[in-house]
Image (cartoon, rainbow, N blue to C red; front, side, top):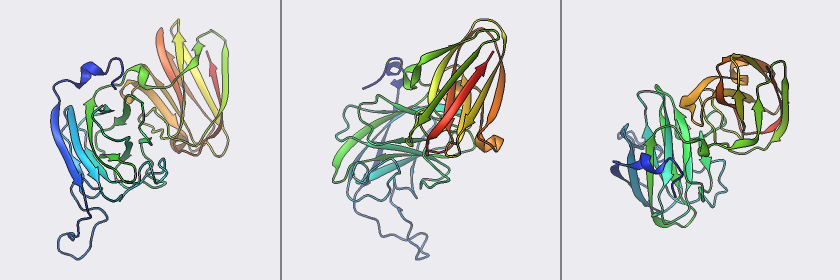
Length: 295
């Protein structure tokens, strides 16, 4: 179930067991009489803290659901879940690889600085169901906490195993468009599209939980290239320039959240080589955008 370039990364893994997601715990919080939403070990309020080293986690999920995500339908993620906490000491990409021994089709969610998602805390990963995708990945920044939730379908009683690997994902982990952008002095590349309201794959410093387009950029001579985004009011664009799939390869990025408008430009000085341009979203509403690339 691993992808090319990933199998070799999952060696020398530490092994940890997840919580048993059985009946709800009735314990109160510190004797105050206030019951947390999910106080059990492995719950949203008491996640299992992971070391900053490659690790394989295992667990058994059974019992009621306590947390669901926007990308689920209440059935694919309607069963029990386990949550893990990652607090990176340095910026890093994180790969999540469900193992073939997993006895059900899981849903994966990753939220930052809080386990419970809302409109202001959309998941960095929201895959429901996980299906045949070999791995998921996200960009983890130092100074933030990341909550990784393995969820299960309604009525599940089964075991899972997941590898957590701290490394950049191979380019196969990103949806690179078949259309390539070739640098042409004095040339202009234009692309427009309507992206649906769904979860995306590419992550980086400026975020990007929604669906995206990612283009290969081929640069032949040193020089500046300017990227201009124009989008409709329902689309909150993120523009990222990188050398690979993961956020750790990002050279620069900007977004509507930073610019205060959905119409903005970004100029970068390139050396010859292969790069990737990502038009992403700060949210998951989708909508129309236009990208102009002027060299």
